[in-house]
Image (cartoon, rainbow, N blue to C red; front, top):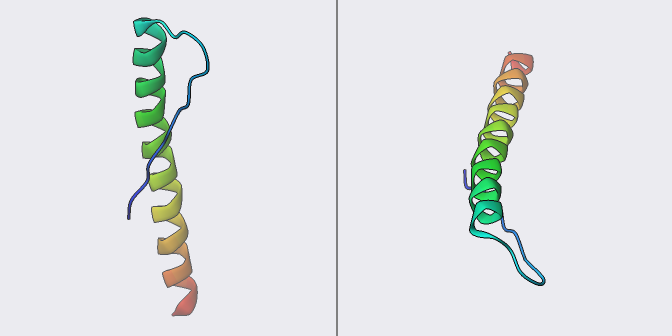
Length: 48
């Protein structure tokens, strides 16, 4: 499974803002993975 988060900046962004968005992107990716894993596990349970 691949989860990719992209941010597009218009104008100036400080290095701090970029770092915060990278951190947020990593956290968001982890949440998406957890939700999808739970969904697939629940779907597999329903099949049996």
